[in-house]
Each structure stands twice: as structure tokens, then as C-alpha cells.
Amino acid sequence: MMALQGSEEIEEQLAEPEEVGDEDVSISPAEEITLTVGPGGEEDTDPLLLPWDRFSAWLHCICVVGFDLELGQAVEVIYPHHSKLSEKEKTSICYLSFPDSNSGCLGDTQFCFRFRQASGRKSSLGCFLDQFDRDAPVCLKVKRGHYYGYVYFRQVRDKSLKRGYFQKSLVLISKLPYVTFFHSLLKLVAPEYFEKQEPCLEAACNDIDRWPTPHPGKILVLPIMGTVMKVRIPTCYDKPGTSQLVQSTQVRMRITVADTVPSLPLCRCFHPVFFHIQMLWELVLLGEALVVMAPSPAESSDTVLALVSCISPLRYCSDFRPYFTIHDSEFKEYTTRTQAPPSVILGVTNPFFAKTLQHWPHIIRIGDMKQAGETVKQMKVKKLKNLKTLDSKPGVYSAYKPFLNKDEDIIKQLQKGVQQKRPSAAQNAILRRYFLELTQSFIIPLERYVASLMPLQKNISPWKSPPQLRPFLQEDFMKTLEKAGPQLTSPLKGDWMGLYRQFLRCPNFDGWFRNRRREMMKKLEALHLEAVCEEDLQVRVQQHTEVETVDLVLKLKDKLTQAEREQLPLRPGTLTKLQAHIDSVILSLPDDLQGILHKPSTP
Image (cartoon, rainbow, N blue to C red; front, top):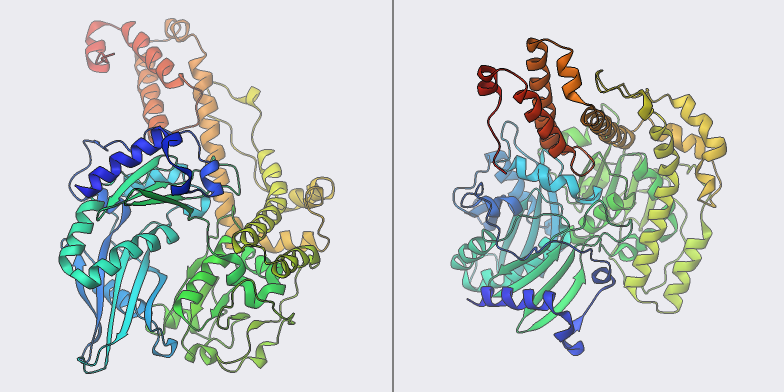
């Protein structure tokens, strides 16, 4: 009853915000940019949703991982009980859910990991995930074949146990990359679980199975164990740099609003390598093999996720592991010396990796993370041969020579913020904006060139197949940079041409171009369909035989099905007009054919 009551109260707050007292509300800048959306707090009554479908839209399962003196780490409980995990997946979850023994994580620790989904098993809600993904921004799109694990690990002294410590992790397994949202959810659920055990998990799962599906752009009201979370998942249509997953939690009539994605503490994550942020941006952009060596899983996962997010709104298309262990099933694959390291970013804490990954080209050594308000000394990029152990000094170990000249302005701006004790949220916003503008300056010339590959609208004929996109020719693109390159939007000097040539050979370009090509093909299909709808089909029917007319009806029905399935970017009313055309053409045919082709649609 508490959850339902809280839900109603939140909806009232949404409908009448002026009635909320100022003293009870803390609002983030993200709340100010929330778009006008439909009533997200409404009950989701989709008849296609079966029991546990709503739960599965958010989570695959919840695991409890404990430590057994004889067996080591073991999955003790999986909720809901019908959830399926392969033995390989269970083993991965076991080892990734506990910090390495050298981390010394006493108390409560939160971090996340990422692992491969077992082959041959498809997600039961693939169609729903596709629907959510269409409107999600790049950084929040689901990547097939991988799960995220969100961990709440507790280690406390307990003399009644043989080892002298209580060690257990509560882990949320999900396809969704909503990192800080799930960490916030764990902060509500995990302490309750450690106090009340399994009945608490059952109650939490039942609450989650009443949640609306995670639809971008809607304000979602999510009751959980007597508390209500209000969330808005951003969309790809939001203004770049403002995409926030807005979350509010209501407890005892108090609302706190906090932006949660992207809300990684960038300045804190990059603090130990403060002077090399631009070089790190280049390494991530080019899909270089990177390893982050950190003292704890929390610092490891935060840093890897910060690196992946620094090229947003460009999608990082290679593999990344926020926390990686020697027990991982890909350990041999990623540490072999018989071939070049793969395009992947690994976060590690075990000292063994200092020796195992010595042959990797780029290593970031993170010490204990200081507060972003503390000063940091400038350090040169170190040679790889100087990295002998995980105890080596923090810094970047690489022989990489950046293509672009160093931007001293951003360093001075952030240093000034440290001296003036600027709030960390403001520092993070400055750094986030810097990365955003740098990536946009880089990607705009590519966007401009790719747009020129689109056929002219006058060349689209309703009675011919849509024309093909022109091919991407590297040298033609490079020629456009002289007059329409990044120098139009970025003050940075350097070898931009060399950076582009390297980028065009990396997985990030391949992923970006495949996505843009898919979008442009959809646009071509949409323009072709709109051209068909503008034609007088009755005139065409009179000029053709019955067989040709039936063939036309079947093709138009296929077009209608394709447009609905792929959600083509059509002008409003196009599908209605197409259906009307189909109906009118069918009516021009003899009765026997009408009975076969036409089922009158109810208005």
C-alpha cells in the first residue's frame, strides 16, 4: 500500500508542481530540460505483456553470491526462480561479483561488470528491447550479446564465521546500461536484503514486475519496497549534452531529484591522469587496446565507463569490461602474446595483470582516487617498460603520439576550478562539454559528407525501386576537409587528416557508418513510399490488367507492413493515406478478388 500511495502522490506532484514546498525539493539542471511527454505514470496495460514480462524488460534476474570455505564464491539464490543462467554465466557472475582479495574492500562497495551472454539463447523480450532502443540515445542503447552486472558487495567482520568475515554480494543482471540508476536501486534494495533476507527479494521482484516498460522520453513512476522512484529515460532527440536520466526518490513525502545518466564523476575518474585527457579521448576514439589498473573494482569500473562515455554522442563499438578478472572466460583470449591485443578497454585490480598485460600498448594506472578538489602534479606519459607492478606510480604508460596539439585551455579552466573550489558537478559539466564539443567537431565533417551520398529527391520514382546510396570513398571525404573540416568548429591544431585516416580503419567508424547507412536507407524507403502515396493509383489501375493490379495491392501491403515494422520516418498521415489507396484499388477489382484481398478495416 505504501508503494501505491507514493505513486499517487508523485503523480499529483507532477500534475501540480506549484504545490510542492521549496524547502522539500532539490532540483537538478536536468529537471529543467525535461521534455513534455505523455503520462508515464499511467498503468501499463499492454495485453501482450505476460507475468514477469515487465520485470524482464528491466532485469534478467537478481543473484545473491556468497563465499563458501570449501567451494569459494557460489550463486546462492537466483530470483525469479525460473530465470535461466548457463553454468558459464554463473561462473562469470561468481568471480566478477567479488573484489580481488588485495582490494581490501571493507564495508559496502558498489561497482559494475559486463560479460558475454551464452551463445544460442535469445532474449525473451527482444522485440520490446528493439522498441525501447529506437528512441534511446547512443550511450543508452542495448548492445546484443552482453549483460551488465550491478553489484552491492558487503564485507564486515563477523567472529562467528570461520574466516572472521561476512562476505556477500547482491547482483542485478540486466541488458540495460543504466549504470547509476541501477546503483541507486541497489542502495534501496541491498541494505533491506542483508537485514531481512529472501522475503525482501521476492517483494522487490514483485514490485519491479508492476513497473511500466523502460520507454525513453516518458516519465516513469517506479514503486519499490515502500519508496517511489520517478525516472525519465532520455531520448536521442534531446539536445546533445542534456540527455539526463532524471530520477527522483520519494520517502516520507520528501522528493530529491538527481540526474543519473550521464553522471559519472568524470573529474574524479580522470583526476590521476588529468593532463592526458585529450590523448585518452584519441585512444578511445580510435578503438585502441586500453587497460585501466586500479586499486578497487569501484574505481576500475568508474574509470572504464568514463572512458567509454568520453566520445559521446559517438558510440563506442568495441568491447569493454569495467571489471575484469583472471577467472574470466576471455582471459586467455585477451592476454595472449601470439597476436596483437584486441580493440577492448579492460578494468583490472589484480597485481598479476601488471605482468600479464605488459605487452599492451596503452596502460592507465589509477591510484586511490582523490577528491576532484585536490591538486594534481603534471606528469609526462611514461614508457611501458617502466610499468613493472601494480604499485607503479599513477599515470599513462604508452608510446602513443597524439595527432592533435594539446589543449591547454581546458587544463587551465579545470585547474582554476580546483583553486576556486568550484563544485564537482560544475567541474564535471565543463569536462563533459569539452568532450562533447571535441567529438562533435570531429564527427560533423563525416556527417556532412555522408549526407551528400543521399540521392536527390527528384530522382526518386514511385514506380521504380528506390535509388542506391553512393559509396563512401575515403579520398573524396578527405578532400572535403580542406574547406569543411573540423577547423570550422574547433580551435585545436594538429594532424586532423592523420586522425581521420586512422579512425576510418577502426571499429567505431564501422559501427557509426553502418548505423548512418541504415538510417539513410530507411529515409529513402520513406521518401519512396511518400512518392507512391502522392500518385493517382486509380489512373494507373485503369492502364493495367487485373493480375498486375493484384500484384500492386500485394506490393503496397508489403510496403505498409515494412513501414510499420521498421517505423520508417514518414510524414504524418502517410500510412493512413496508403491504407486508403490500398482499399480503393481493391474496390476497383471484381467481387471474388475483393473477398480474397480486402478485409474491411474498422474505423
